[in-house]
Image 1 (tube, one colour):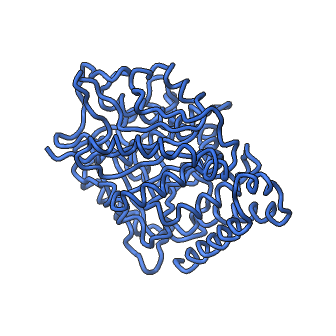
Image 2: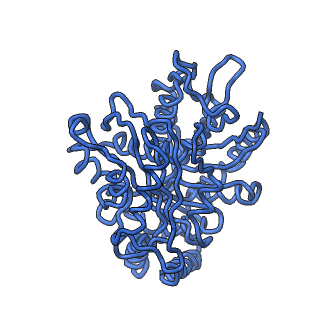
Amino acid sequence: MDKREILSIHVGQAGLQIGLACWELFCLEHGIKPDGQQGPIRKLFSQNSFPFFEETGAGQYVPRALLIDLEPSVIEEIQMGHTRRLFSKKHALAIGKEDAASNFARGRFTVGHAAMNVIKNNIRKMLEVYENCQAFIIYNSCNGGTGSGLMTLILDYLYSEFCKKTRIAFEINPSEHLSSIMVEPYNALLTTHHTMDCLDCCIMMDNEALYNICQRKLYITNARYQNINRLIAQAVSAITASIRFEGLLKIKLDEFQTNLVPFPRLHFPAISYSPLMTWEKYPYDRNRLDELTLQCFDRRHQFIQHKPWKGKFMACCLLYRGDCTIPDINNTVNRLKVTRNIHFANWCQMGFKVGYNCSPPHCIESGDLAHITKSCCAVSNTTSISSVWKNIQKNFDKMFERRAFLHWYFAEGMEYYNFLDARENMSYLLLDYEEAY
């Protein structure tokens, strides 16, 4: 039986909390109980593929995941929560007793560097029992210290030892108007610089856009991290549905990367999801396929703040699930191609890749989203995403000109030229986006 395993790596507090929401949803979709046992309704994977879970000798399904943090508090919460029997000790790595203190340099050069031998050994042990590891999926935030600095070390290792495996990241980036860490621009720009050649695809999100969705679409006045993490889980589920279930138009991760990344350095797509509706609104919504598709190009459905009408699309993957038919999908995409609101670069006029899976989307019973019969997720590579990098660069320059906070990075082993190299690399990235336009 041909197995194509996928190893999920969750790094730092944000990566762990996003991962918990994702595995909660995956278990629901596959009929797996919180203790890893199969539920009464078997909804497991495609017949020849067990990519995200592995079955133990006791008949328990455990995630193919590695939970990594430099301090134990978040991992202890997971081990004490309702999924404590889902993750075994080999999956959770609480290394040390101190975190990276929101400092990229601590995560990469000192505290994180000391933890890498343990991390390497655990990754190697997990891969030794796999028959055909297809890809790595990394969940992190580049705003803090662990999700930025330590994550770059992990990616360096994966790139050097398993360079032929696909590496995809779901990453939280700095927001323009919402920030909880002063040195976010330093951490984000340094992370992008060090992972430019190590990542095949980095799907970008930010908390401001996700909070706006919670407030304006789901009417949650005081949204918590759990609310936005469950939104992210819905998008991750849509992207990976073709791998986990049989479908008529399947998109594997390597095929996903091939169609979405036209140039190696421009591998930062944005993501949007539709429908976003509450239980109260769902009975009155027609939920037509063409409306769902157009909503994915609405700014209010985007998971990162940018203005797509100010740029041009280089590629776009439309991923449909549920009560759809292929003729309806083809008709919808054909109508979308002639709309004047969606502009592709002049060298890529027909830039849509379509995936369809008949498995309907699921929602957490106590969650914010209504149970729906079909959904659409758009992953778009557009030149307008450069506005995110321009904002990071602008904030970076404001602090760097004053040499603000640099002494904390120098104390952990960084040099002045490290910042100059990262700044120069970002300038080249923005130039690449201008040329792609």
